[in-house]
Length: 147
Length: 147
DNA sequence: TCTTACATTATAATCGTTATAAATAGTGTA
DNA sequence: TACACTATTTATAACGATTATAATGTAAGA
Image 1 (cartoon, rainbow over the protein chains, first blue to last red):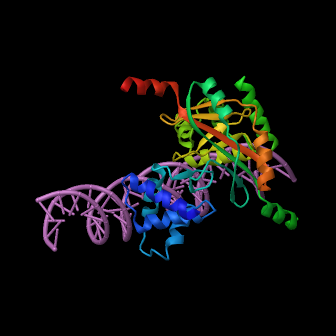
Image 2: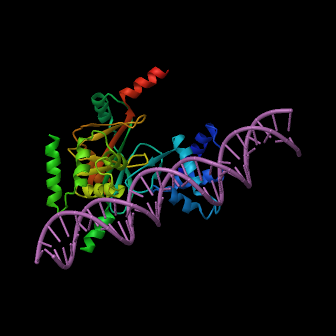
Image 3: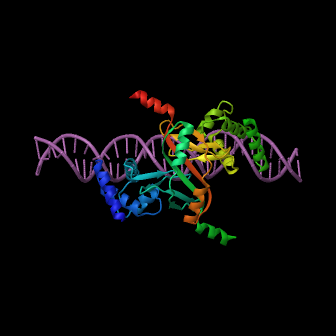
């Protein structure tokens, strides 16, 4: 089924006049198959074997292309580097403060918050971002053992 | 009333064994009186006149001290640099995508989301972050005029 | 006063990201 | 096919925010 996603993404790109290079194909493929939310460097290192000459700039350039096409979202958390998330359907992120693991979860949406905020601030609201922080099962286990 | 906030903050710091230096006093005071959400550099430049010899590192060091003490929150958006927010009471941020203005607003809390997420992911949830993005009245006006 | 720990300063280093210029490859047209 | 044009990649340098380091200064306690 991720094959379908890949095909859709490639079609979407083509239709906006963006060329499908081997590098772009590989980056997209990697992002779709990766459940983690990789950094630019993660992607770069993962594709090093297949594209020994690929530059980091290529990764960044193409992530920007994908972002502009709406295929990818950039997640800027407290960490040093941005993480990138292939856009499938609306979901939120649960982030482990210990190990940085990110797990997706769904919630019926926060339209009500958007309406209230729009009313109170006078802004025209476009979208929102929500992240929850906590500790994952693995890290809870580790801490318990350590004590 | 912001005087009270300042006094409370200073007391809170003292009680954790942190010295109140003139620089720390000034940084806290600036943050409390500033309605914008300043970057480290904003603070540095604002205090340049009063402390001509102060180093940028001092600002960063002390922002970290304040953050650890729970007095200040660090906001990492897509922008290059972090913004810092003096913690008063729980509130969310409405951010203008055009001019970067940040307006606070209140909402009864999203405890339900936290519960659901905890249940689904198995995480122990500590806190969450929510930001809305859109266009402020000023920028809506400007765009309308430009056309 | 002496000692010790904490703070600040000045500066260099680090690291993620972006800009630049040259090389390469694809696309359309005659 | 050959050519010109444009997009893309590569390699490298530059940038800017943040952090680390070492030296200096300052406060508090014995």
